[in-house]
Figure 1 (cartoon, rainbow, N blue to C red):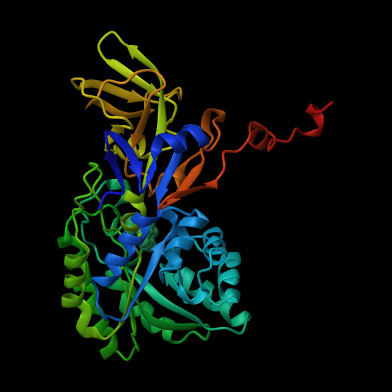
Figure 2: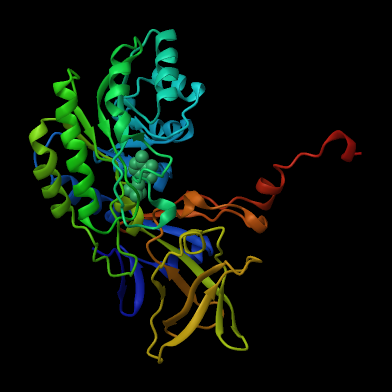
Length: 421
Ligand SMILES: *Cc1c(COP(=O)(O)O)cnc(C)c1O
């Protein structure tokens, strides 16, 4: 389902014209659709029927309170990777009893915070972390429910920077060490081993690597039970890919994913936890920008827009493709542009040789599928202000993160005594 559609040649989000919001908010800005978030969450959840399932939205994909709250109110828990994310999730109304804590470098301070809040589960990634957590929990008079993140050594066949389930990656506990570490965990006073978890990578567009990994981990659950461990939870991670071509013909359908999960691990009678991030929010957001100049270079035409790599790093960091469309369609023959931002780096390029409607100075343009890993990865590089985030609900919109003032960002610097005279 696409919630950013043309009506009479003009792009709308739900029932509102994108151009109307641009007039009020100013460009560039992120624009999210509540209906898209709700649709994506509900059809994913419904696909699992009555399976004992907790969907923990991986909030790192989009940590705006309004986005977390929209999903939380539908029943989602949260997967967090830092104390900051856990604070955001709680503030957005998610119960700590629905929060799982992932990440390779949880600190004592983070463990303490999470335990005091009564977190549902830690996904432990190493032996030193296990001992540290047991120590912290024991000192607080608590017992931490944990799963071990296993590294199933499967190739997720995605971009190298977001592949996490190969034995060469820093994530998870090596397959051969699992039995040993589970035996060690069973002896620790601050730890209760309740399950296993895995997360093999992001933007995975084929079911096969998931099935391979889930099968391996499912077998491991059975072996560990034979060894006397009471395994009651299985956390399958996130990583489900989306389409970036503007058509929303998602490469993996909820229905097929759910069917596979039930077939491969359904018989284990575990509570299943899934941590989708991108899948829930990726196509719920667009980036609205404006043409600053159309520049005819020696060899190519450049569309220079007011959004830049600091607002959306995915094209330069992951060579990511994003569909790019004008807000108002025109009937002129399409032309090829390199679509670039104002930042002083050649990497500040959203697309090369992209064929779209010809555009003029001051016309609006949108980059699609930016709801995940867009605003959260933004920076103020080139002393550009973070751009607003706007959420639409049917006929209404609200700015859910305003554009800071220049004073807000420049004023953060402090001069040392020897320079302030
Ligand atoms: C990043 C991450 C996710 C979410 O990944 P998506 O590809 O956005 O679904 C889930 N679990 C863990 C442990 C992660 O690191």
